[in-house]
Image (cartoon, rainbow, N blue to C red; front, top):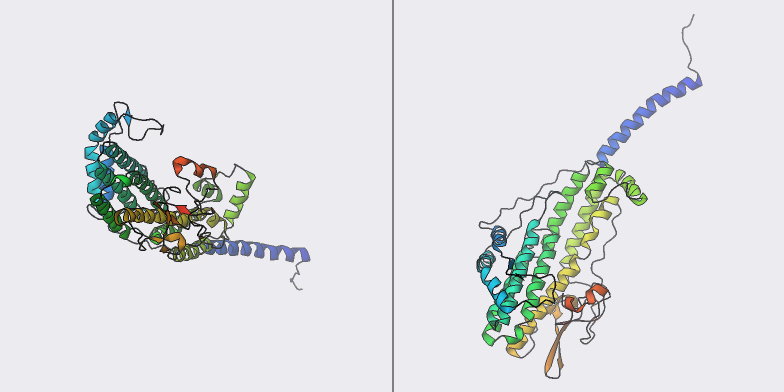
Length: 412
């Protein structure tokens, strides 16, 4: 008698399900592991200079005396007039700090970076305070009638701003721009009082500094590596932890819960590849002359890069505006010194063609074509953002604004 039994239809279905489901689960696990298996990242090794101006500047910050007998380096009420005698005493108390800053300016600067998401940068706030000290020193010397020393202190602040981006990420470049702006505005207040010798000395120093300006492409390469390292760190997080790492909370809103779900299904390998391609295009673009509207790159197609990349959008514009104002300042010094325009000072907003000079009676108007790239014959642009239109900010233009960037009017 045969013992062979045939399985019923339901039993065969159960067998198939019993085999298929674990197989699908294993396949899903394997596919997920593959999609989130980001190749190792090889980080460059940088040797920090010895001595490093970075360390010397941190020593200078410790030496700063911010307050003396009620006189402050940077009073919160900008309209408050502080007595000159009190400012002179506070300046004298900061002699050692200023000497230490100048020592740092003679040294090579390199920002230490770890590429870790947890790295903080307290030194950038310190650098801004040092720039404020130099701007304070410039104004105090100017009010005391010592215009050449006022110009020197202002140029020191500019030099400090140009050092800060070296070796760092985008935040360092933006802090450097802010410090340059402090020095530039301090210098603009005294250029009309400088004699030929001081004008020549200041212009020669600014020309030399410009040759050492740190390229934005180098800054973005640091950002690229940092972003790649961050993706590898975030690939190990669950969606909720990942959201918190990026400054969001999953329970905050329905939108964030949807974002958490998208992040869960985002391939970290694909995100790393998208991120790398985006940076490659961005770095190539910033090496070219600035164009109206800035850099136009495709919107990231994955949830992770939608969060990581938007901060970079304004970098090229801010850098171009800063270089434009730097060239306008040098052009003005040259004009005061020689009495004639100099075509070597170019316009980053105008495809690096010479800046424009317009005769207005006995005076000259120096201007750039501005972010829209159109020559409006020296018509100063009006900021579309109301907070940028305040006089104390100098009517600084944004990337979408029209009109020309006029020296002494549209200053950041």
